[in-house]
Image (cartoon, rainbow, N blue to C red; front, top):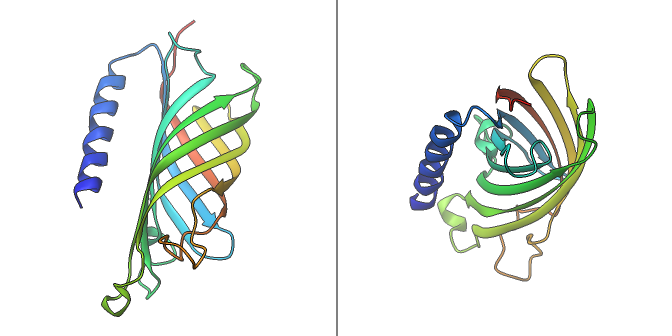
Length: 181
């Protein structure tokens, strides 16, 4: 619970700080993720590119996505929460279709029924993904990628079994701020 509160405070600080920047890119949207072979998870994603630091190429981001808003919504599926900080590099600046690579680090927590409390339910997250981003004529950006969790449940370590290695995701984001040239 403390970690969730910490991440929410960080989001509020980052959003407040960058909302006043007016010379950079701030994208806010929804993230739809599917672990190959397991759950769907949905949540929010925020990414920021500073005009003074490789503008519209280097992005820093935060994502929170959960099975509570997808597979586990109104079902008996395991509820799991993911908190990610990320750095992304976008290629082909000023193009509509842009490839990107991203490195992610964060925290994973699942909530099992009480009978399974002895099983591991928390883990660090370390992943990378690569994909394509499409900038529509509107301030809407659509990004899709395929990724790999380097830390995942293998059944022989202290990692939750519901943390799968391969995932794909789609993010629909709206540019709140756009840097000026």
